[in-house]
Image (cartoon, rainbow, N blue to C red; front, side):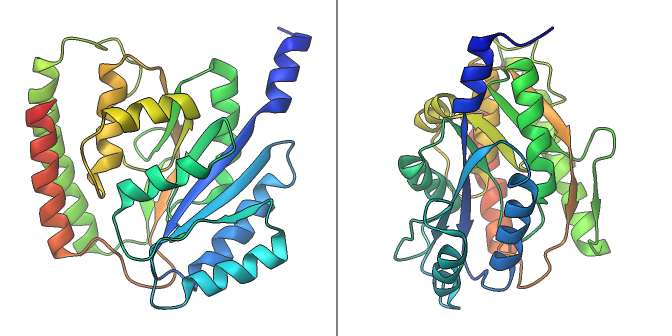
Length: 261
């Protein structure tokens, strides 16, 4: 079906704000920004990248300032914070400064490849989804480059999450017809900005579990959710922020989340 003039006008006015929280990512940041520009500059999408650095001691903010000089302040927006305050609050901080009517959240460690962003946008436009999430569980999705220890750890979390999810779904009274294959997925997502703001307002979690809670809240509020298969790869430079203490806190927060929603 051909798009109407109004549809075309709405599409052209769309703008995508990519929220990129960083902490000690000075090696990865130039690569991720270059890839974002590579895959979006050849499209008609209007976009900005909002870098939210949490006081990285390795000079990540200095690198971000250089990237802003290269690509322009209209494309690279810097909204740093003085110290590490958590992933959830970084997104809250970023959305306050976003000028787009759509928000894309992703990691700066190259585990989420920017080549998938146009697919997110195309799927959302085609079905007018409230949000689109990337998952490794459908079609060509998968995980590559992880060693046995990390793969086994992820598998344990999947089992843990699935047990909680089965219990939670028995308690859930709404959104039972959601089309998403709701599994362990906290990967890159695209939101309508107003929908994301409503989800943020309803969330109580911080840190890594924040993204999980937003999906749970989206189901409770009966928002429409689309899925895109993506590949998840190990970081190129630096060390994972998800250490032993973070994993333990994530498990506790996830249990509390399911018990209180």
